[in-house]
Image (tube, rainbow, N blue to C red):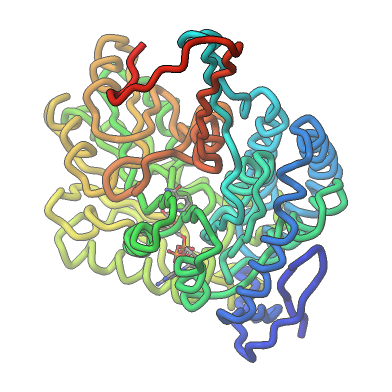
Length: 498
Ligand code: NAD
């Protein structure tokens, strides 16, 4: 059985805690590897190593740090097929979609290539008599990131791209469910010229996350995962005096106004609701048609589109999506489907019971569709994170606007319409962090930033973009005076004003 080990100080470090976790192949349902789970002592060794390496890296001039990022971009492109296949084999998403996981991360690294400009400070000459002021954005030191299973390439790169480019050393604690790609990324960073100790991968579970949050040398923690954990990491990190950003779960709505192009909406919904088996925090698991006529027409067009979807193993180029990540997650989704029935929603298409020939043990679920879902239902309020689409019928624009606005989550939302006026009002008033207008999955490009509202994001600064640069740096402002000499010496007991 293959063992997946930590990557510390530029080399593989075999775990010593004696604790392991199974890594499954979701296509077969079988265990394919074991990953070492670190304890606090192993984390401490990695942090000490990182702390030793960091000052020299921070002293490297920014264009040389950028050159490592440029080379990493080249290596990512050269290895993208290998990375996508490895990713798909542990996550279960289809290889074409795994490419997107790698490439959306790569875009953040491309952004980080601009670090000489992005990290530049400010200077004011003559802020007072012979007084100049400058501000510098200095790295924090050793920082850490904890990432979820659903984007094992992109989300680590959201974090370590800006963190390393700005001169920090990074401890990555990836999901223990698909840990191989993060290690491979760290190996490629070393190949790109990163000094050992600046990017370290320490595997583990809650035990190691608690140790990261409490470790006195770690100055900042970035977390992406489910909301309860995000909130507790946010609170504990702040209590330990750290800078923290924690992105949580989601339940994104797609609002369909009566004037929308329904064929386009249905095409968009297939990918946004069922792509990656619904295991995306920017998926669209709720569709809100406005008016009964829109709802009936949408439902009629959804049915043949759903029937045409193909579920298969992640290496099958014809499959639209693959298995979900684990047996436990599959059982949880099936539990929600049953709950939807028990709550009184109409189960229009039941995705339970799918067997993919030759892969009977795989964690597959066919697409599920519910209609007449009500906001009071638990299946509406909770994140299901599976290939389940729920129709919630609204009677007016205002009712449709209030549904995502009042929901506990506020990650993404989309509106489908031909009316610029309606779209503009919706985007302005909706209480959600990322809005799509005729765009089903509005994940911002790398030079904007990613972050949800309410229980989807416990953070002052978003992921990547300029927020990422700010999160991993702190501002030092220097006020300097160089007297000419020979001037009268004055004493003052009032705060100086200019
Ligand atoms: P998860 O919360 O189970 O795990 C996330 C990370 O936290 C993992 O590294 C895991 O090892 C660790 N962890 C798990 N339980 C913990 C605990 N009790 N204490 C401390 N650490 C713990 O999430 P997941 O199942 O890996 O990922 C899916 C979730 O992530 C979904 O809720 C999804 O919406 C969310 N997500 C959010 C975003 C976003 O940017 N908002 C992006 C991707 C995924």
